Image 1 (cartoon, rainbow, N blue to C red):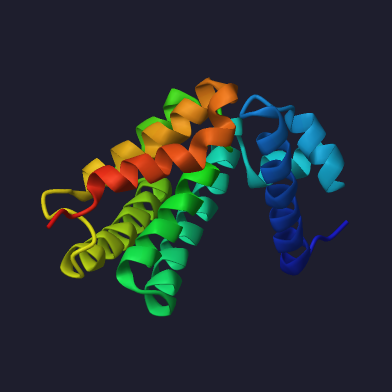
Image 2: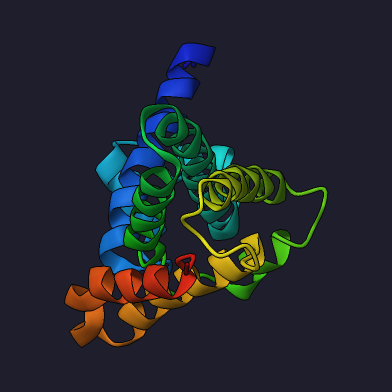
Length: 186
């Protein structure tokens, strides 16, 4: 059977879409066999595109990071600086719990300058940093807040909601408290 490039691309995209759903439901240890079955492909096809679980998770995260970088640019064009940053942080925190149980090996790739995941993460952080700088110039956020501060706090809100499911419904409130702490004071 001859698989064309367009068929291969469709399989790749379908596997990623299904994997996103399965990982959001079952965590990062979700069954790859279930991903392949739901995508309507064989295990061989899944492994041709993603030779390991980590490769599949990297692709999912790369899509997420790239999407968040693009979203930052769109929000900056459509909204005032403070509102753009707030909306972006809400989306970031909302999605932070999607990939619970992320293996340390994936996190290590964020520190690897050669990793495609590292490049996507850096682009996302730079885009969010531009939103932060805009909000600081507009007087909405304290001048002493750095991008590292922002990511640490937003990630902490997402992590807390993941660790204590009872806090999930308070995620927006927790983020509002963080934003209040970051707000510039007269």
